[in-house]
Structures are given as C-alpha cells and as structure tokens.
Picture (cartoon, rainbow, N blue to C red):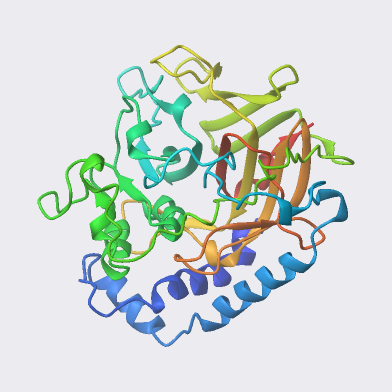
Length: 381
C-alpha cells in the first residue's frame, strides 16, 4: 500500500475544511445538497477561536523577530507613512479595489485549448491551482479594476481562489462558479463583491460599477498581500546565503506542469507550461503583446488537496487551515519556510525558518497552490 502525504494529512484536512466553514452564519442556503449539509451540521461545534488566537500570536512573534540584515538602513521615523501597493509593494498607484479574474488554462486538445491567454502579463499577482480533472486554472489579480486590459478566456469561480482574496475584500470576477464557491459566498456574505456568479441579476454586472463600493466598512489597504521590501528605503531581499533557485519545476498533475528559468539580466523568472497537445514545454505568452510572462517572485505552497465529498464532479478543495511547506524564489535563490492561513477571512502568511515573515522583493508574484501528493515531483536548482 502506498503511503502518501495526503494519507498522513487526510484527518487534518477534513478537520480543516470543516473549521473553515464552522463559524459561518446560519443564513447560508443549502446549495451544495444533502451530503454537504450533513457534513456541515456535524462540524458546526468546532470553534475557530483557537486558530485566530494562533494567528494573532504569529503576528506578534513576527513583529519581534525580524532579522537584523533585513532592517531598513534609514530611520523609519524620518520617512513618510508607508503606503504601498497591496500586490507589488511599490508606492501605491490608486485607491481602487483589488480585482481577481478567473482565467481558463485548459490544454487537452486543439479543440480544448485556452492558450495563449490574454491580459495575464498585466496582472500584479497570478495564482495557479488544480481545480478538477487534473486541470489547473488561473486567477489574475489586479490592483484596480481600471487597470484590467482585455483578459480571458473567462472561466468559472472556485473557492480555493476566493479564499485567498476574501481578506482583502477584493472583487471576484468570473463566469459561473462551483457549488462550494457559492456556499462560501453565501455564508460569508460576499455576494456584493462576487461579479458574475450564478445569481447574475442580483450582483453587479461589471467591475467598474462596484469597485469603489466599500460595503459599509473600510477596505484593508494598509495591509499588503505579502511582506514586501520597503519601497521608501530601496530595501531589497538579496537572498544572501540562500540555495540556488534559478530553475523551478512545479507539477500540479500528470499533464499540468509549470516551470520557470531565472533571467539574471531582468532579474525575473520566465514562465513555461507543459502542453499536452505538443507534448513539450512552451513559453507562456500573453496573446495581446506576445511577451513571455515573467515574475520577480515565485511562491510555491504545498497543501492537502482532494475532491469535495459527494457528487461534486471532482471539484477540488484546499485545506488552507492545515498550513504547509512554502518555497520562496527571488533573485535566483530559494528560501524554504512555512505558510499559514487560519481561516478564509485570514490572509495567507509566509514565514522563514526563524519565524520571521518572508521578505518579498517588490514587483509581480506567481503563487502556486500545489497538492502535497506532488511534492516528490517538485524540483529546483
């Protein structure tokens, strides 16, 4: 019998998935059917307070344990207030709302082929994760709805992407959604920011209509998606002492693989994806400008991933609350640490081996959420 990482983490994953929804409002409708409803009823007694408390403790620990070499050279007291772009760490460009757009990535046959996509090179953050049937999907994240170019092909929403956007009250733009995604939107009262779900006539129809709607509360723009090097001081994470990470190979499933090569001249990672049609890796380009996608940072987070129970159509769920191994690549080096996400409403945080929050270089980031079972197929050099 083969013992996989998923086998070891299955019980943890099940508890995590139930905890993620256990504190939800009882007003959510039973969209997922009786199987999911029964599972949800059995887990409503689980409290998320412990997870929240742990997250708060982590924040305190991080604040007090920054590595001396990462401190800005100039006195922070003499600098203007920190007001960074939440996705890149650069000086803020606008006060608009973050927008995540779901983009198809299927490449099975010449007829079922979404590549090359349009508009991905303009995204500040690109998230890739397995969704069902072994295929992956992208969520292209932009700092402002007004910055979005022509983008597509548009595809349906999945909760593993929504949960990453929720802490930032980002607009979630897609065409259709899974039943699990609908449940998260319902129980977390996210329908006002869900654009193009199943209730087409009950939600805004275009991001420009709603991207300045605060839903009656402040948008948490003072927090960046990751901890970025300070733009005010020119700070940088030179990855001193880090192992070499100039070539990175990520396997999401048998036919969905993504790789990167570091370009020292641009100091960015150039993206390629395996094509089932051609049987080889091909440059990932934006059809709008024919440019190969490149990123300043890569973050690979391993997590327990398995299909939702019942008649889910193989839709995959990510056990975020379990946390896991994280690999951060920048400037041709790699740092190994751990990621945590205490609940759907908590941001994903990445920590190095000392417990300090990982320092990202300013710029664009690729984030991969990868199944624990594919850990042995992951490599870098």
